[in-house]
Length: 210
Image (cartoon, rainbow, N blue to C red; front, side, top):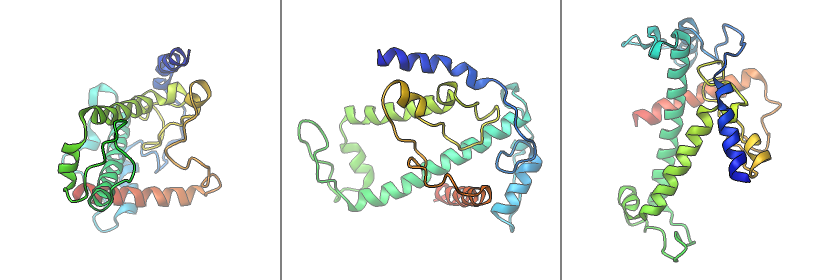
């Protein structure tokens, strides 16, 4: 039953690709090149807008320039977050070994004496596939707009804003949202949220360079 409900949620994802009505000129959405220029000046007043390959003028997959820019913004934010996770994970793996078993058979986690690359090699193949499966499901949930609850990021959703798990939680099983699952930032001002997003983008760029 739960599996059929999950399939119905994913099947409804087509509505997530429908055009959405959004306000033009929002720096956080960055729908046009002028928005990117404005955002770049906030992110780094010294470098400002830097696009040597003219990607912001392109029309990927004939979706239009605004959709292309939204795709580029989403990609940068996503890869920046992954790079930050990787940086923190590298430090943790180099210094911490979890005390509980890694497998149901009781095998321990790889020793901290190993470098993180060797630790990954020591992880069982089944565990690696579990990790890849979770990543794939997160990607699917993002691409389908949370089961069609929100537009696709190229159709009006704010780039970097991951869909809530509430539809999945209501239909299948409770799951905490990835960002602010307890609602601590619900009263945060729009200006503060924009400032924190700029900080996140800059930190993500630094992590990708590192």
